[in-house]
Image 1 (cartoon, helix red, strand yellow):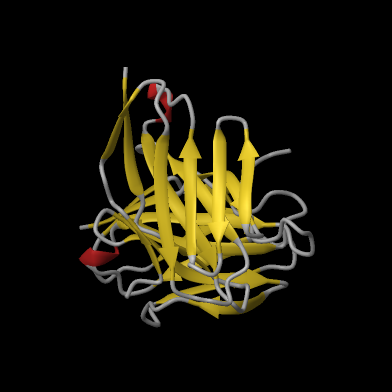
Image 2 (image 1 turned 90 degrees about the vertical axis):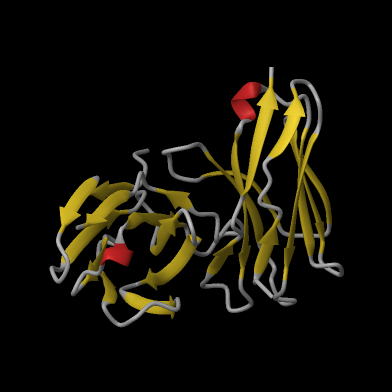
Length: 115
Length: 111
């Protein structure tokens, strides 16, 4: 079974631009979570989607948004990029409805650099 | 108080020794607890999950949970240099839709 895929793997943008990152979960996984990872702050929760609905959101400004499609694929968008948005963005997928729910499987991440 | 706290380390142990990693959490209603391993430049990888009080063993790894003390630990027996990585403790919140990660403990296993 294929793992979680994320595209693109690397991205360089300038301040003020916007960016869209994509995540395809493991087949059969219906929940997708997004995280931002930086050396100083560690792994920070952005949001979680299930059945195209955002069920929870972390403490990030409104510039960070996401969505999930009917095939469980998810995208996140960051508008008006700031230097501090440079980070590794990780997507994780989860099976829902089993005893092992909440076990998350991570994609390789998208490394975003804002210049 | 952070929601999930771990000693950042680094923790250094000799090859063959037992490495002990600890984690405390603040949400008393949490029911799901995980340990992830992250190698430098890679994404986190799930190595253990635990849901009830007590010990859970999987190969060289043992996870321990004490909900009354809000404490989770991971023991790695017969540590190998390949175990050198950052270990992340993760706790799912009471609502069940949000996973909070600790800052991670860096482990070095010396050959």
